[in-house]
Amino acid sequence: MQSTDAATGFDVDAFEAALPAGLVYDRRRGLFLEAMVARQILTHPVAPRPGRRLSTCSLDRMSGNCTLGAQLTSMHPRSSKCAHRHLDETVTYVASGRGWSEYRQDDAKPKTRFEWEAGDVYIIPCNAWHEHFTLDDPDTRKVGWRNSMLMDRLLLDGKNPYHDDDALYNQASRFPDRFDDQPDYFTVREQLSPRRVRTNLIKNVVAEPLPEPNPAYGTGASIMFYEMGGHRTLEVSLVGIQPGGYIRPHQALAEQSMVVLAGRGRTDLWGEDGRFVTVDWQAGDLIAPPFNLRHRHVNTGDTEVRLLRVRNTFLERALGLERAENLDTRLPDRFPARVEVGLEGGR
Image (cartoon, rainbow, N blue to C red; front, side):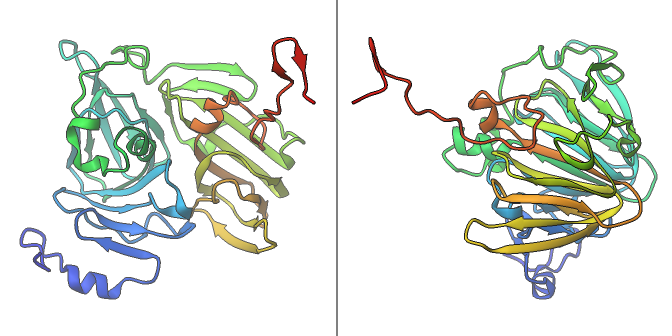
């Protein structure tokens, strides 16, 4: 394989030689981060993705994740991306830039268009046709979360879904229950409960109202949950921690990652073998606490912390724990109450 891309002038050999530990360049799929924290997503390294017109850094391998995929994408001004369908669920946070997207479920119907800008969160409905466009701002940066790695493991036996167009990107199935070309799809907002909202576009998420702090979450801690796009596995929430507050130690059966929208703090992690580590973070960082590891988040600054959290809750949903608004989710106790008909317990 050539070390320099003739079209872009990208020197792969020189780029690989300068990479620090934790960043790996795959010559088929591009740049990967293998760590728990991505520092400053607005300036974080990205690299041209082979065969694509954009630069990326894959966050799929953060903290050993294997069901919650993520990608940091940089798009040039006045450019477009995608113009396709895919089965995987997607949530996108716009870190910088402005633009618009066009969606369509039924090929015979007009496209639904909505505009987005830095600070917004939007979704891509399952297998809806879509295309994204940028305006004349500086480069647009987005973080996109997907459940494609889960689908890869369940449907494709671990094969790479990004090179198997027929598996995820060329399916005839349509999901009008998720998106049916409604003209108000990206303006509808329904408050389902004090801590739960149904919507498909969150404008300026850092300024969203939060419910009163809930002692069940810790001290000075609030969480708002969002139901977006009819997604079954990807859960979006906004976490707030007041100065001097914290999210209590907890562990859950869901892979997750969080963008620090405002404030600064730290995450403490405990291993079952006694290991302990503290990770400091500030606005602009992205952190991915490892799956099922006991941890807590502490506000160490003098302003409120706000975190955009995305989790893949497929395991909780499969176990009947979906829509759980508590922090901890554990495997259910399946010890048999009845061994056989007419006999409770056992010998």
